[in-house]
Length: 173
Image 1 (tube, helix red, strand yellow):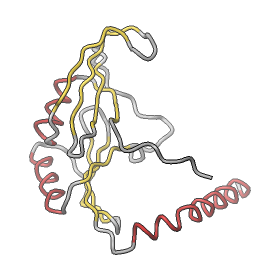
Image 2: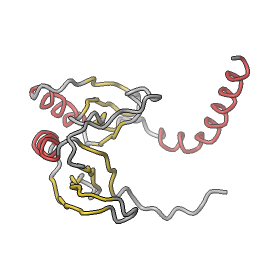
Image 3: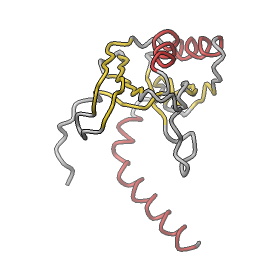
Image 4: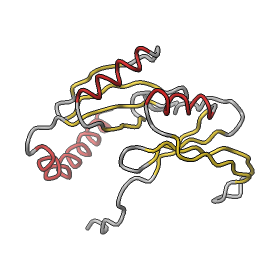
């Protein structure tokens, strides 16, 4: 039995950055997310680890945030060595295809390499990397009527089939 749902929405997703100003310029000036907070902290409240660091927040249209930690050492965050670079990404939704195209064109004009528009049948997306190596997706929903309901109704069965596939693949190896 699933636990009762009490989580309402994303508050923020946090990621390291090599330089807060470089990150601010990318997200605020290019992507269009306003920086709403920049807090210098002397030590980590949850662990007591020493700082200082700067914690910056960019607001998305629904009131959630994309946040970054500038640890002051100028290091670019390292990707996971056992995960393809396309797996870990942050996807942001816009209301219509026109905004996806406009973002693609703005990014390309600024010299950012962009992949797409990629048609996933239920969304159309572009992909690009921020200055910290974080893969980003800007997407709009294009799902046919009934798609979301169908996915909800078949999600557990699809997961069960995947688990069987992995077990058979491991046994054959």
